[in-house]
Image 1 (cartoon, rainbow, N blue to C red):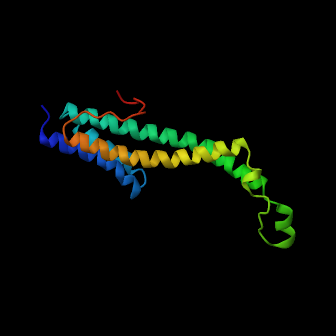
Image 2: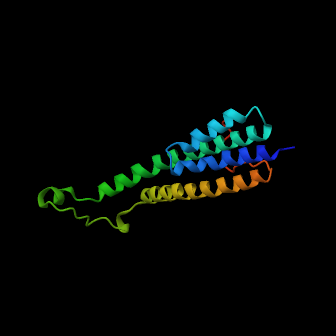
Image 3: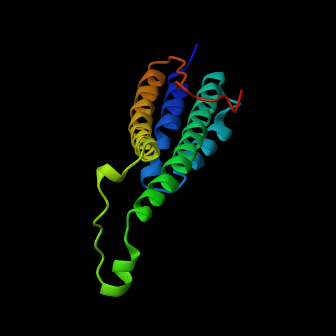
Length: 151
């Protein structure tokens, strides 16, 4: 039987991930502090702490991979379409050739990867709130697409 205190601590562990919007790496620091200090007290807190950290590490990994795809592709395509000769000789920054017509299939992959990063961050926020609600009701919540780093 899960106590109200265990439910509250597990819920705060999930919600502590939202500190990433105010404190850099707060989504790792605060859940680790809460989980490591209370994991021996309750199996429910231990389970939820592991789920939070697995999800945050998975989101970080997915974001890094998508950024490694998107950023170089988009930067290369933008610089490929800039006429540097005009910039150097006329002191004006005009991008005449940057249009959708000049984008290739690889550019579309970069744009899709960038949009997936945005979608991933919105989904992360919604899933954290959903997990906190489920946990406050005493349910064992498992994040979707979470890689089990901690078992």
